[in-house]
Amino acid sequence: MTRWSDAPPIDREVIVDVTDAGLAGRLVLPAGAIGLVLFAHGSGSSRLSPRNVQVAECLHAARMGTLLFDLLTESESRIRARIFDIPRLAQRLADATRWSMRQPEAGGLRIGYFGASTGAAAALFAASQLREAIAAVVSRGGRPDLAMPALPSVVAPTLLIVGSLDEDVLQLNRLALGRLAGERRLEVVAGASHLFEEAGTLERVAELATDWFAAHFAEIAVRPRS
Image (tube, rainbow, N blue to C red; front, top):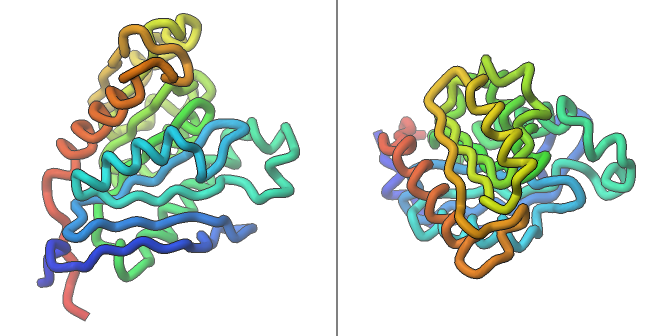
């Protein structure tokens, strides 16, 4: 067996093949990556979201790989109904997960999801379908209520992060917490609004997410020799 600790770093632009489209993305795998986190951005955002990029960089420093990709094509992103079609976005994320597993560089790694806003609903919906294949889920300012019927089927350990000033979303997350079937936790970041724009709040999100994924990526993946 060849351990992933021997694998060189990777940073490249990719096209993620899903059922009905090719989606632009960026795959980063630090040397010795211990897991791979797929990002699901919120409505009106993209793989270039500066907040998600900042969180991804923190994960890289902790030897975790990331895949930031667009859930919709450019033309689809202009259609409001597509932006809020959570089952469709979840299917795209599930397809991207299977695509990741087929990549020679990433096929042996444990998989996690990081979802923001409506993207968190898509991440939870996809996790309910893929179940044990997903090692952990983190939601930043998420709308898990948009995936409420799927929550009892989510067995992946799930961390919900919400700003203390984001009162409506915080209440929705509290309601959703009790519907999740597996390990779950709600972290409230003091002084943070929905976008975590206040000083130090996004850094706290990155720290919480890194610790959560590290705890559930603890077993370093291996792959057979080719």
